[in-house]
Length: 562
Image (tube, rainbow, N blue to C red):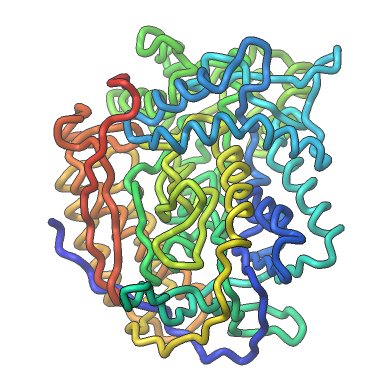
């Protein structure tokens, strides 16, 4: 067992200077958060949506490829389920996958009814395409390659037309306020329950600085952890805040080691940091293919689906070729698609690539894997409940069990949609009376914001695509050192850095303990999948800053396929 770091049990923050109340607070404004808000309308008295930046600044707007569902002729939820389980490499929750694929088509149709303008064929049918790991054309897209932006537009329009949903922008969720747990019939008191949430708001009228929202339930829809790494497709706001907040409050984080690295992210040079341009898997779905410097197609003979193999297979193949040749990237060849097709099907990607000096119509696109999606997160049941009474989680912040060790392409938007609908069905009936927040006895702390660069570079080089025991041990030493860099000022940079450190430590511990290669977790020193020892999940919990990692055995859920 790796030596555990001592992390802050809660974030150091000023005492709340303002207070407000809402029955339900939703943290996040992507597809998961806004769907939950819209579905809860009329079922609870007051809904408050808080978002770290502006309403459209989260990850949803960056989703290029689309949303997967069995909507096409000949396709079935059972086929979608089979593809999801294979991609998840034996670590999916089968019941969660069945919920996703069976409820997905109706959820997408409701999204269309809300006003989302998906692309259609010339004869008026929904235009469906294919991405990695799918054996059917089942990816609905909008604006060619602007699906997330169109979904976000439709959801924001619906929110703005709903005056009974309050929105606070530029609001960082700091920590949960916890009240006394429920007492059961035997007189036993349960775990502390949600009583509210502290926020730091920048310039929202009278609500400026740190304040407290007293509420009866919190729905986390705050996105992923992409900024843990130096290069990511995630926007700057994805600093793992929701996962860290939940962990400090008593929730369990599951499957953190399964971080998906998208195989085709545009390579901008060795010094590029932060959010990188994604070259959607849909480009390969339309016929593009990966080549090395010699022009050889690298995916031929590697997998039955070749360039459309599941993402972990493609990312590993790219990395292996890069390591063999010493090259920092490979190439995506989509020149044969032609100018007219590029301009119609992938206008956003085309414009982005050209802005970086690459014209995909006439040139190869330099690509390399980069952090893309967290398959793990806050552990939930099939109705979005966490271990903390009154706390729900949905979307990328959550681990519903759908994705297993490697998310199937375009299942992420669907997961946020489906499980937010499920939360909205049960939450109103589960609201408990208002609780007074109890005195918070967790040890406060904060690390300096300037640790971020070293943390990200360490995680990328030691806990990135390719992992090993020596590298993970080195990461542990660096993270331990960074934990000692106490902040001299209390500000957003320090809050974010502390959240990043908290999630990085938990992720590195789980990666060190999983001594096998499975899905997106690739151990150089344990190159084979090992169901005999590692079929199951690593769960991380925290007690006042001290984390514990435990293994929960479970049968493999893909019928032994890999």
